[in-house]
Length: 240
Image 1: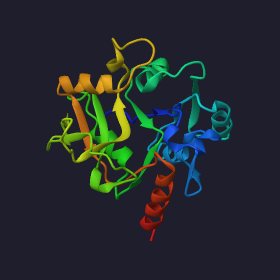
Image 2: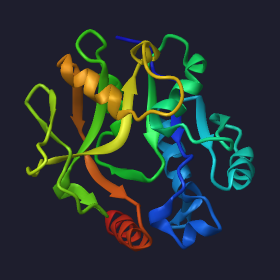
Image 3: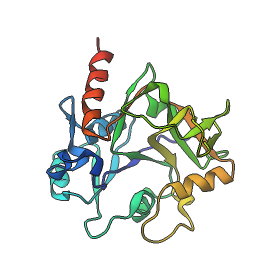
Image 4: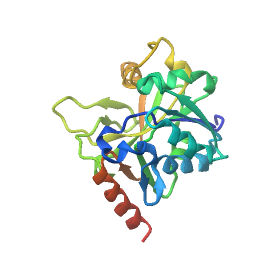
């Protein structure tokens, strides 16, 4: 048994252009779904999973993000200020890498969350994490269990959880659900400045060490104004 994962980073510095005009006056992570800000829909399950410290990067309307997160005492929130320049997903994590020491940590996107099935997905990810045979573990949702998503999927997954990307003209059954477990060591030899986490996905794929865990429940992708209503409808259905 490995030690519980106690740290996480939420990628919340994006401009939210697809959510306009809402994001002209509010940062996307503060957009409310069923009365709760998107970022709080992520902080809540992280806290339930035992995470005690969360790094959140900020850029667009950063003052509003700071004010919102300052109200929270647990988990402890650390801000990563990207007002001067956006660093993309990988660069944003690398900027705060020292905060995570040598231990595995969660990385989450701020524009989606999920409804857990009988077993919480973050706990399932922790149980599945095995650094001996994986560099990254991704939570992946069946496209059939995705609300607010109309793409062609991202990955194929075999019975051992090994992921492969879909070809450009193919349709794949699984979509990346915006949650990763990885280690600071896997960021070695990455660029300084902006870069995408896709660089690390590709490195893990090339080594046969990119794994997936099928989401148990319903994935809610909230990328556009219309998706807010879809997510709220799905949440209401889930509690009936």
